[in-house]
Image (cartoon, rainbow, N blue to C red):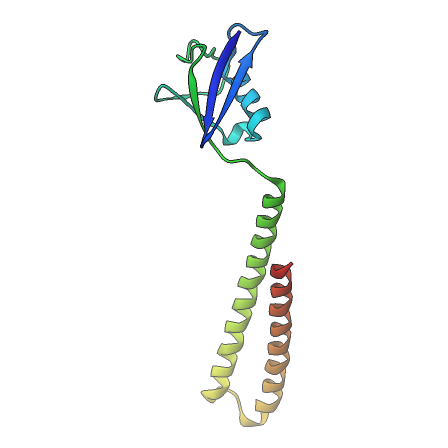
Length: 149
């Protein structure tokens, strides 16, 4: 029987290999994933000050003898958190597009104020800018509603 204590933060997990007299580091990492829900790609294992390479090498070859303590570094990937982060990144992209649109409207207004447009076209241009501003405000409100939900 091969037993290793895995320490992750303040929690300790006892990993036991009953049928396997010399488990590999990949077998250890797979068992750790079952217990802690930290995927293999997110795990970093340290034993006696050395990082354990996850692969086909036996734990004894990596100096992790039975009874050893192995420190686990890594974070759980919670699907709900991933979904929220993805949604927030999408909202951030929309906010950046909206910010660019508002800067373009500001440039148009500055151009009108600086006299780059004949006076007879001011009314039409300002009406168009007004509609775009209202649309931008509505988009901002939708983004706030998405963030709120």
